[in-house]
Image 1 (tube, rainbow, N blue to C red):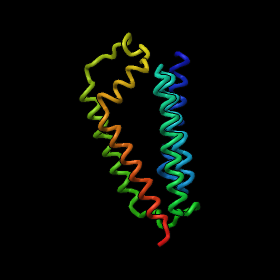
Image 2 (image 1 turned 135 degrees about the vertical axis):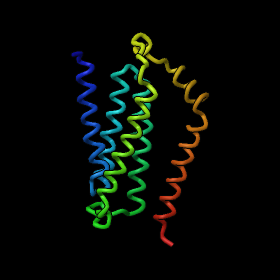
Image 3 (image 1 turned 180 degrees about the horizontal axis):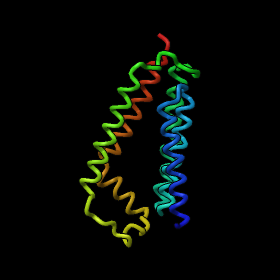
Image 4 (image 1 turned 30 degrees about the vertical axis):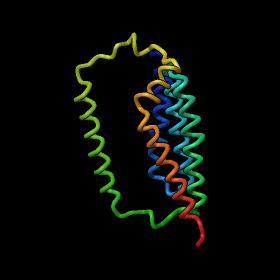
Length: 166
């Protein structure tokens, strides 16, 4: 086994464990910190696969900006830092069934879409240039990019409005 595959598996396991803790943590601040581990793992996976620009962008945008926005939202809304008793639902089994159903649908869609296709190993290992990434973001994905930035701005304004005293 190659060292790259071993590190990929270790990082993936850490990401899965942290992602589970994000949704099962009863402390909202701890959930946000587990989200840092998941997002840092994604950046590490990008770096391992040779997309260094995308990995650094992941750190700067998601960990540096989006997560800070989440933490400001938590602080501005004055959410309780400790355990929240009203969050403990009696319908966890329903959430588990929905999660398993969603996993099954996503797995079926992936297998159906890529069942007989083989990965071209030569093209998969070619590093992406910064120009290729920027062309894809600002040409092919300009509308989703702007929509996400507008959504984040709306979330920040909403957190300020909620936290403001009348």
